[in-house]
Length: 74
Image 1 (cartoon, rainbow, N blue to C red):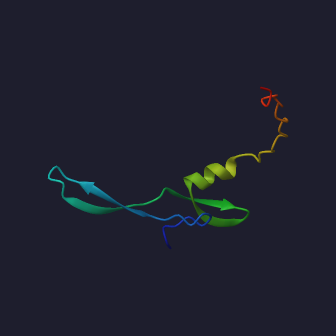
Image 2: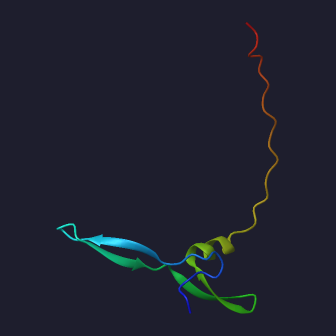
Image 3: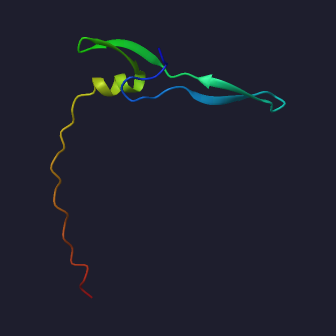
């Protein structure tokens, strides 16, 4: 099984650790995957997707009309 989020598709990234003498050693930075059961199926999700799933749906509020000013008077 791949280390990849089933919802957003994020996977590991490459990073470099540097020693005191500035020698670059490449390393793999894995994402924080959690196995969860959602709607009866087991999926692997990253923690950022888990946070957005838990958020309630937001309803857009109506915008107030902009104030009209008489800036053209001279």
